[in-house]
Length: 315
Image (cartoon, rainbow, N blue to C red; front, side, top):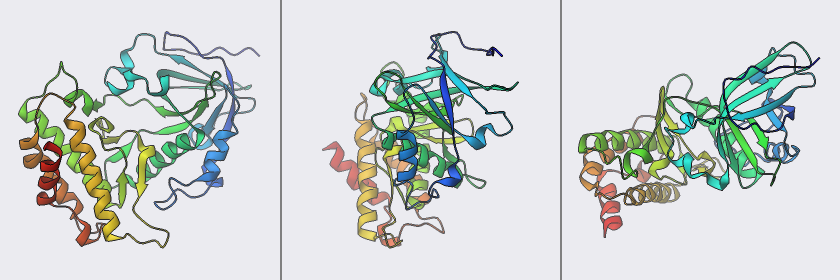
C-alpha cells in the first residue's frame, strides 16, 4: 500500500531511508563513569547505512514498525532556528531543523519536529546522545537541568556524517545571542540574570561530578522547562576508574571550565567583570557547596577563586 505522509514543513526533503530500532537496554547502562565510553552504542551507530535512521524503540512504542521507513523535511522558512544563533553557523556544515516523518507497512505513522545535528564521527555522535540521555535521566524528577531529548540517529547519504536527532524545543534562549550578538548588547540587568543562570547550570554539573569540556556561553541555554546544555559530547565524568573523585584533578577541571567560560565572554565588545562577580560567582559557589555535592570540599571553587581566574583572563 502506498503511504502518504502528513507534513507540516515546507522545504527540501531528504531521501526516504530505512529505519532500524535501537533498544538502549541492550547496550551498556548509561552511568556517570561510562557515559562517554559506551562503545556498543558507537558501534551500533557506525553500522547504520548511508541515508538510513536508527531510532530509539521506546520512543515509538505502539507503532507497527514492520518495514518502517522515514524521511526528514527541512524547515524552508528558517523560523525554527531563529532562537539558536550558534546553529546558524552550521557546525560541520550540517545542522538542520525540520520534521521527521515515519511510516510502516501497516496503518501507522508518526511525525515529530526535530533538530538533526551532524558530528565528525559515529563515536562523537554516540557520546552526545549518551550524555544527553544521562543528563535527562538525572533531571527526573527533582531538577530542571537537562539537555534536548534525543530520539535517534541519521547518517547523511553524502559524506556519511553521523547525526543525532533531538526533539525540537521551543522556545530556547541561547546565551550566545545574549552576549555575542553585536546587535543585541544586553543591559547590566539582563547580563547579570544570564550569568546567574549560567552559574546555576555549571555549579549543578560540578556538584554532580561532571566536567563540561567546552564551557563557552553558547553552550548554555534557557529552555521552557529550565536549563538546556548544548554540545554535550564534550562533557567528562570526574569519577576515576576506582569510582572516586580526586580533589586535585577535580579542582583543575573546575578551574578550566570557568576559565573557558570567562574567555568566551571576551568575544563580545564589553567587559562583564562586575556582573561576573555580582551574579555568576556567588550563585556558582552556592551550587557546588550544596549538601550532597559530589565534589570534595577541598576541590570546591569559591568567589575568591573566580576572582583570581577573572584577573588572569582579563590580563
